[in-house]
Image 1: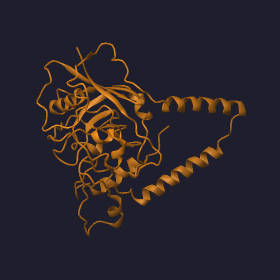
Image 2 (image 1 turned 90 degrees about the vertical axis):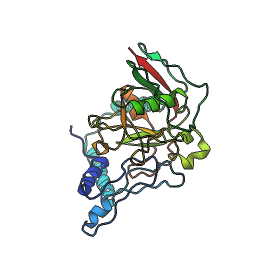
Image 3 (image 1 turned 60 degrees about the horizontal axis):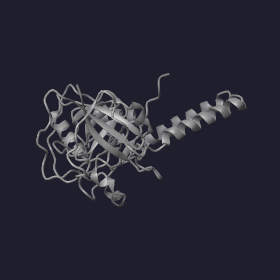
Length: 317
């Protein structure tokens, strides 16, 4: 069955109306979201449609977010009402069947919400790259020197409170970005941090060192490693699927430590973010991540962000 287009797809359609009139930041992890200058030639609907879809990050005290157009919200409500009406019109099953389905759903929910307490084992066939420190190092003075070894195929093993995710890193296409991520991970930089920003139908964002501290929650999404490094965008690498790992930024050449993993194709991000890896195992873990923000970028009450237990670097071959 062909799914209904969600708010994200509708957002992309509105975004297309603005193409050629302005450039803006779609995924921000470093400064005030870019908002284009107003134009008298643009229709009011277009003026309402364009909003910064994401939250700013690295500059403390400067996090901002804008709501999606009211028309999109209303469309979502209408779609929800339609789904509810369809459910009411569907013939109900017997009590026994309903009870069995309820038990099954409950078991699934329990499995999805079960918290993992410790990192899992290294998958067979991979070699663990030794750590560079015994404890987390979260502040650096400069971008790391190149330390990748020629001929090695690098992977990131990301253990989270919802399960383990294995990512194939694109060291051939984006060596600078991969080297940065590998160096931070080998210094336990990401251990104990949280996926502070997770949006259904979009992505999960993490990598802020400050998110390891619950007391700093108001500043989550504003942190970095103490340096920034240039873009490493490759035209052949596109956001054409879910499970893609990329660096978050606040504009050109502002990469640091924050990253995101997509949940579905997001081609409107093409050419703006360093895409440097793809999930090869653990795709089933991504839907289990706690959604912390809705699609208008507003916090979801009561949502508890998932933790990154560890990020270990592996090689294969």
